[in-house]
Image 1 (cartoon, rainbow, N blue to C red):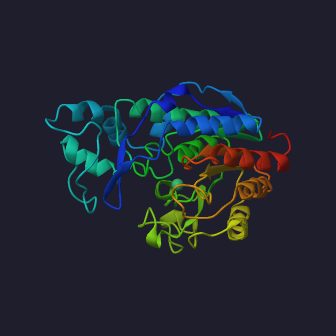
Image 2: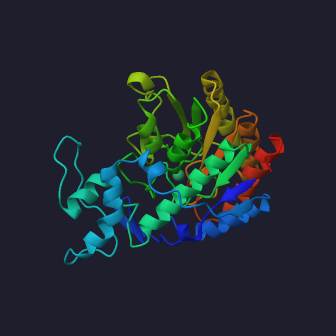
Length: 345
Ligand SMILES: [Zn+2]
């Protein structure tokens, strides 16, 4: 299976975030790339560098206001006397009904959902290359590959059309789905990350051409708190095109795999022509977030089960944090997937 990744994606190196109000080292570390690269290679992937795809495929998902903000905010932030080294918001609109602020501090609060996505000098370029890895992977599948893997880092599924959040800047899975729409009338996104794919849901919430399905730890006491509940079904023309499957904390392989069947039933009924898997590996029992209890062999079975849908598939890396098995979990997923889909590995 082809995998796409560019070295620039490693440059973004966030230092801090707040966890339950306390400053902690940011878990979205560049070292994740090394583990994931090793995991992809162990599964037989060949790693290729994506091309520069320009802003077009990113602007198909994200607003020009947000892109302008992300490109320039670090430089603007440096001009504020006494400002932090990284751009971190400290004030947010409680609703979006007010005015768009001119100030860097105001815009940071407008475009950043939380403190987990600090912006430094390297963020813009790293996030762009991460998005281009997703674009290249989707184009490989459009060109006939049964499946391909995008080693996207920084990750993307918490990013809305004009808001960063939860370590995410560009919604790589959404960008991949939009590229697939060039050749597919209907595209499904299946998000198996530990956390609800709130940004992806938000981007496609009113659209019937992209079905969004997410399995995740119940948000009642877990990030992203405000989204991910079973009664969020879409709106307007998109009503009925979003399915959330929240899981009890510490759910095991058996519960996860059984819940996947419900996801597959909805996906089959949508009859998509292509699939994006938002592949978080943080549902792992040993992940630092500790929300669910999927095992390493469990990821192989999840991969096998998803391959059973028989759809051209773009696999996009989302979460999964530093622990001894991070690379092994990717190997398990990709090997399991490849064992059930002819020609995928
Ligand atoms: Zn996650």
